[in-house]
Image (cartoon, rainbow, N blue to C red; front, side):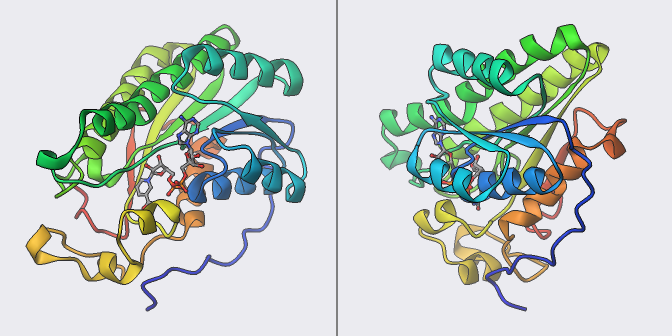
Length: 265
Ligand SMILES: NC(=O)c1ccc[n+]([C@@H]2O[C@H](COP(=O)([O-])OP(=O)(O)OC[C@H]3O[C@@H](n4cnc5c(N)ncnc54)[C@H](O)[C@@H]3O)[C@@H](O)[C@H]2O)c1
């Protein structure tokens, strides 16, 4: 098996999300763009939100019915403006997938306060900003799905990832509490926790896919039992199911998509 994962075979398009507006944050990134493409392939109109403009425009040029929205989601006013603009221009948001995130790996003794704050600003506070604004829009309609992309590091202690893991654990619990509050409004909220996925974030953290698969006993990393890192579309496939009506009875759940790396802790 190759440690660097190839995309699984193409899904048969189902139009399952036809006439639905799906907002995806972090849509310029590896996992977010795979999620945005997957929803577009199923007929959705996709609002692709990210901090960086150029890759969003490239995505919009190749994916029909995908509209780019540039926003810094750590800014609550910018988040509210973006959600309002999407609803005004595209229609009511049926599904929101929040995949924007940042990671700086460092031992705690060397982690700066600025790095800690940056990870909490993007990974935690932006999750609150997005969840709150989208919830405000969805509650009167009594319909919607919110999915947060957290990380398996949110549940398993990891060397050099204390700030990242803590910020993702907060995002995970926030999303599941939101699911409890919004259940009475028929809005489902779930969390997907990827393990190592082959994207710019993984490589920037200094890990090669082969290292992630092999594990590292000196760093208490077990490796990946399925023998490969995730392709971003592996994460997108889980998101699509959770967003679909097939998952209408699933809320407040955390799904770990990591090839078994965390032994389902
Ligand atoms: N790649 C992995 O191995 C892995 C593992 C577990 C979890 N994750 C999580 O999956 C999500 C996607 O990761 P990825 O691997 O695609 O990373 P990526 O770096 O390719 O994409 C992240 C995207 O988030 C955007 N972003 C960052 N700050 C933002 C802000 N303030 N406002 C709006 N957008 C912002 C970035 O511009 C980027 O396009 C992240 O939340 C990440 O923490 C990734």
